[in-house]
Length: 196
Image 1 (tube, rainbow, N blue to C red):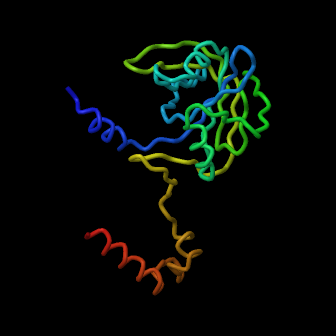
Image 2 (image 1 turned 180 degrees about the horizontal axis):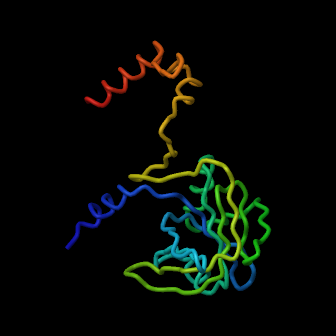
């Protein structure tokens, strides 16, 4: 038998994006929740999946929805992620959300959005797995919000020589790139930190 907390901690080693999945119930009321269990499935036809706990109060909404939307959150949307992660409150109070082509509320400010027609639902252990066909999508050139080890994070791409020059950490002389005094100090600090 697995230790549930140790298993959860091990799963937390995997870096994920953060999404909000939205849909409307039979009366047309908007529902949404934060999820990091999102994944691409197929390019042809375009399909994605996400999962939801069988104990979730919003499970019936998503089971009955003919369409739903997955919003990949931008780095500045942590407060929205926190709001939609809390159970029980009206997450759409004060938010104007027109529907996307699939009929699900469309939030603003996302890094990417995938509007889907619901195709299949499977049960896997204590979660329902929703598979949808993407009928509409959009992408913005913004940094995504990420989640790792129980914390939010940001993407840090490997710096280029141009980045180091722009930050005053390196200077170019002909084809050669060398560290400035600030660059040398930063490198020494990082090396000392790595030895702890």
